[in-house]
Length: 278
Figure 1: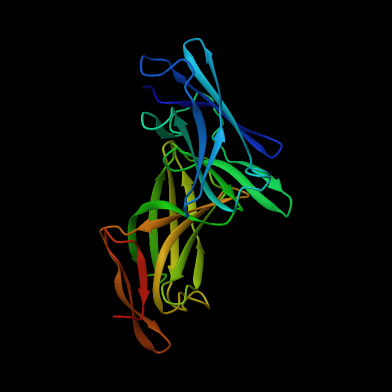
Figure 2: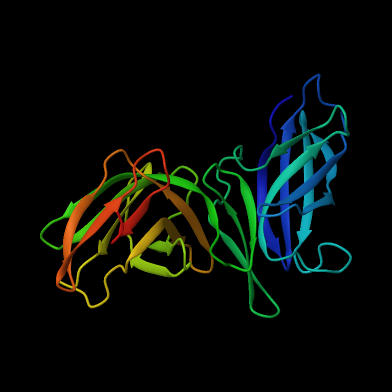
């Protein structure tokens, strides 16, 4: 059976219209039953929405509306991340596929936002693997991982420099980048700006973590800090956990009249920066 591809993703009021097509072959009935599926990424929520089916020029077409203001029994779509899929046919012979990796040429892949009553932001966007998702609430979520290219020590500025890149094929250009460090025990966060650089096929980032008071008043405090990269798209955010590269940092810095160790984890573990611990 051919893979479905999207031909339209767009808002009509509070409803997201999702339309696409599948090329007819011997494995696909003339008018198969179809449903749009919404899977809650961080929970066990699953919503099934009806999809209308048609036939056109050797294609089976489908269309569904996701009314985020009244998606089920008059209730709005709950806050969080919802991944969009398509159920084709009925069990046991049916199958479920993700929507988004296959698309019609020229389909707009930039994040599309709507604002619901109560100042709730809802955005439809294509993630790192090209899959379609709906973000309700605009909160930052860890949604996948990316490997850092390097972690290095800048002796002159007494900073830990983290660099990396993301495949640009499925990403619209973000407007901001932030490296977020979360202390494991206290869940306190520390943020620094990540400079972004775009090329044809990749989005590079670079962030410098101050670990002494040589240039700033508030360096990274003591503790073990897990690293993530938050990309802002003007109204929504996408947060990626950062995986450690092969190389590490392990230095002694001068803080408060004593030497303090600063070190980083190594691949294949998630990237963590430790200040002041063995």
